[in-house]
Image (cartoon, rainbow, N blue to C red; front, side, top):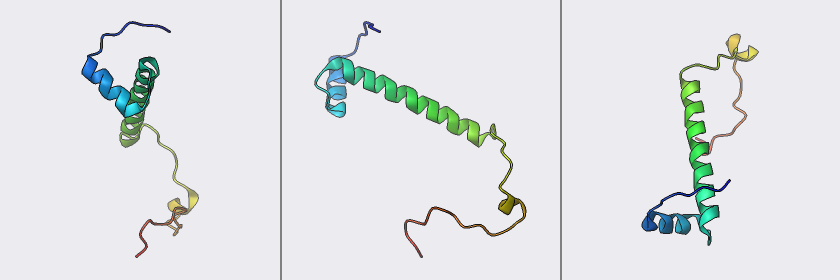
Length: 77
């Protein structure tokens, strides 16, 4: 979809430098896509923190058993 947007020259120059794109359209499209992705991720994180997704705990956790973390620590003790 084509649209017309007024963007300050300095902001557009920064955007082209940050994205590494040579053309304005791909740089703006990438910035908008990234903005939307981050907003959605932030909203998803908020919903998780508020308990919107209430899944039952795994059987080992419910039984009070010890279960290993499948992801090893970055810095072992």
